[in-house]
Image (cartoon, rainbow, N blue to C red):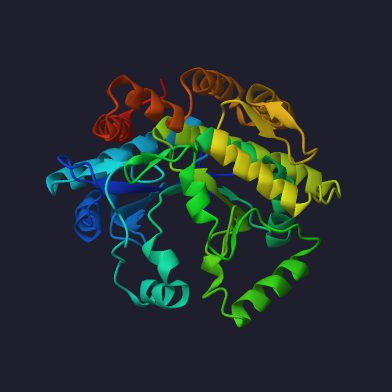
Length: 376
């Protein structure tokens, strides 16, 4: 990532990768138009838009940004361009973690050696990988620090899952979960919360063993919720469903950046981070995927259940100094209040469904919010 004029020298740049489903405007089911939509959208967006593993999805990425407003603007611009390209080809874009309608499996897989190798290696997992996520990148060019930052981000993964939950429906039914995508995702052999690493050397030894065993095809297949990126000088957080609105994606990014800044300060003090039991962390993520921000969540540091509001307050207390430093405190406070009031994407989808019992209404609401919607 390069420097940006006007950005505070100590403020790391951030970027977002988003995945969108392509849906038919009549049936509201996913359609395999990715090749043509990406080609059309690339006329405006260039390499900011690309194909995903499946032909139902389009991936887009923002350039590195230093300010919330800049990132939010890029997300809105990119979403609008992709939506326009899809509409020109008879489809719509839907920012949702799993397709609410239709039988989307087996998913048609994109062409290319890497995708075909994944089919050969992971088999049925690939054909049922019908999910869309958001990945946040924060610039951490020192790889050793990036590995140790991961330890400090682990306790907050469940809350990030809860805040971004946006996949309650799948293939015509209510799953009972706020993030069904999370349950589908964690079936992969290397997914979910990352291990605790005492050093970069320990990280490297584990990765080599996974590669040599054939569990990983390459380092890009490390699907942990937090990882040092194999392509960019960043720490990458991959825990979230695709949020319904661009505003929620930008909020997620500034929260992750503030967590990263806070973690970097701790690493520089010699703090290795809390070595949480993997079972508690995984259980807390499951609870967050089930209930989102409704009810109680599990604090993986203690194993106790706490109200979602208390968890959000704890997060703000933890990252407050970083938010003040980046100038994001007021924006984050406002957006979190609105998110708590209106509910996550999962809550809003269920509210639409409750009016008439119509999943086509749900898809229409998601499509409307995907293009240029703001949070409630």
